[in-house]
Length: 374
Picture (cartoon, rainbow, N blue to C red):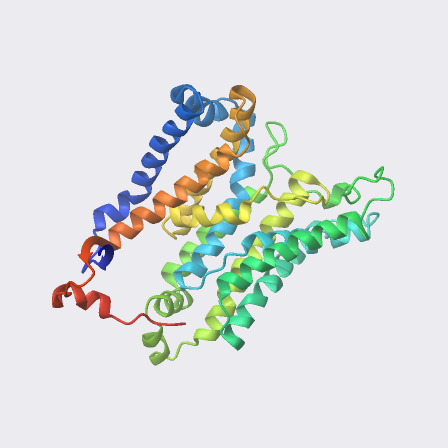
């Protein structure tokens, strides 16, 4: 019986490693054109509405920055986890807990107005996200649980907890029975960067600062070197005296803190209250952002802007073309598929093998290399 096998390449192509995101994006456009044609929409007209019209006005550029900010913040945090070979899939839940924790002051103390309110909210949002991310990290360290499953399952707990809060103890008594909290007072609202030209708030500045800071940490510090070594060669890291368990907890908490900062930035800068849904899926989309940016914080800035454009384009396509709001999700899913597919083919070659065929020594060597466990 014939089967397909993946054989590890002895050396990955440096050229295709650089071109991989661009190839993936081009393949996404081709697949998207086929999708639009199948639903009876002119692909060229669809791409114009999807990618060009959202950039035609100054206020739309502000909207692009608003959408990109949480994607970049979450993406750079996830990139550190993934460079460490730690798989945090629950950034969506950490985003929500950050939004909840940061909203404690304006919801429970609505009349408290002070210059320290907003800094406290941002700090509490980061602490809430980090604390929630610490749960799968500690379970991984203590019981060797699969962090993919635990972090993902905690997303649904966070969503249900938020829904319970806004329909129960935190519901605005003067809100005509709508599931929402009280509106934040002025001192609890994240201000716009340029109020006279648009609504882009300081969350975008936080995202840029975080990206530059983590780029420096990962490339220029001992902590970054430790993360890279333990992620690529755990045994060598242990021989060097690095603590794998400490690193797992640290990168999870860092990722959760940035997701929590993104959560309270969105709640404070855009919504100005808690509602049953505060995220259109930023935590999951940021996974695509991290890989499209090649796990490089500066590359993630560009990738975050591209993925933010898919949100704006999806909204524009609903109005102009009458397509479903799921189109943006389809684009994002196809992009992740092609990014991962291109990366796989850079690292492995496909071989057609027979069921009883012997494997040559040359081909067997890469397959026989044991993988390092956490």
